[in-house]
Length: 404
Image (cartoon, rainbow, N blue to C red; front, side, top):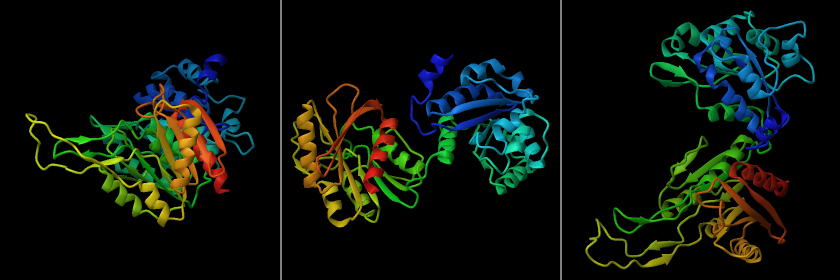
């Protein structure tokens, strides 16, 4: 089991390293998701300790959660006073209590101060001392019961955080696992960018050939989105300007399509502390864009004219800390660094992030990347190939060093 845990823990990020999470599971059918949820928390570095109510054991066996977390499961309070170990007033208590799924019964018991299951006992012990997140899951008619809604509002006034269920098929279902994990990370993650305004651009832009056709590039926007979310998790006020892509983000997002829209959106956000230009904005625009639909029965020449570099125009009017990206295709490492440094100087950036999109599993359309970060003194950092979420964490850590 130890080898199994090692392959999972921290595999996505280190955002929850050193954090202990009490995962309380109650008797909703959504308890079948608890193993998956515990694994996702572990993939961000957390240590997960499961506590189950009696009714939860009718849905999922404790052995499943013991296997999933690698820790013994608490399904009764014994002379070992497990509730005090996890949530008592001492230095080794856990960092957060997550009740997912939470039934109407458990929510009402907590709101009334009733303590008669391992879950409610742990919550009673940690109430007001440890952050609590409750994730309801029940039939929608139960959730909309005014007494339940009153109990939710009552607990919110005591600082308990609730996640809104996903309403489908007359049921108030668990939100997506990633959404629950994001809420935990946001609650516990270091807030070292609190008070900072951050602008991030991401994704491609399009250039119209006519009213139905356009040219673009392969950028998915994933790297920029992960950077925006990293800053957001760490307390920054983030604006993400996102080109046309199938991806979305929970951070404040302004959607654009064309170079002109991207340019105007960026230039209207000059008053930021940090600007990260991760978008693959169109290098050219179509000079002879046609109206309507050009006939496919005849030849048609397209004249492409270079666009101004948005980052160059931005650096002339903004005092922000500017980070740019430089993508090259199948070049040597030395050439990549030289070209990136030249761009850093010509665009007056503070840092530039370079990568070779001609190499496998790197850059556009890939979930992984390998990058080099270069500063004004030609000092460079090499971040080897790994998941873009982990890379985003390391890139923001380096930005933080320079701001300090």
